[in-house]
Picture 1 (tube, helix red, strand yellow):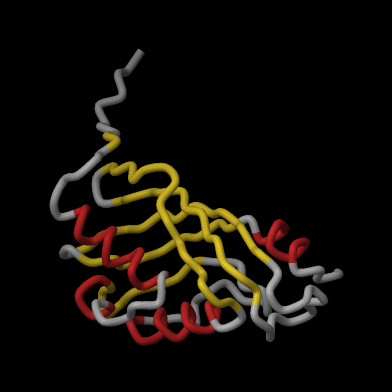
Picture 2 (cartoon, rainbow, N blue to C red):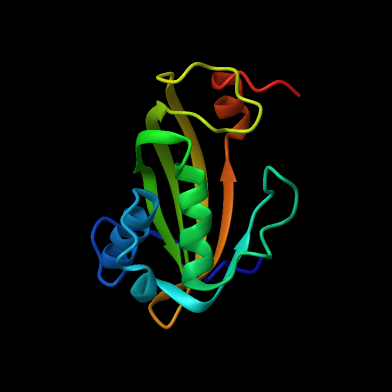
Length: 153
């Protein structure tokens, strides 16, 4: 039987991942100042978007910032934090996050009143290139968020 020689490591605090992850979480928490340093110019998103599409229309740091801002617009006090990870293998970093905040208004199809508390989770897989995030796969528990907001199919 052939032995698996890949190394998978759970890390607590190794540079440069610590700074890259801190910058990534800052983006999701509404601080876009480091977008150019954290996100590669040729950045690509892979996601099943609510309005349809696979995320291929989101390109580069500016495209990601716009998408994050749209995501955050319906909420106030939305805070993302790392729940598990990061786990690093070669040029990929994976983490599980939790987002907690308050629904404000404007989410398509939402019937929940403004002020509704929200909590949802997800998993990010990030491909790193030249000390920046080049690709992003996201799998979020949108069904939990949609149920909380009273969105009906």
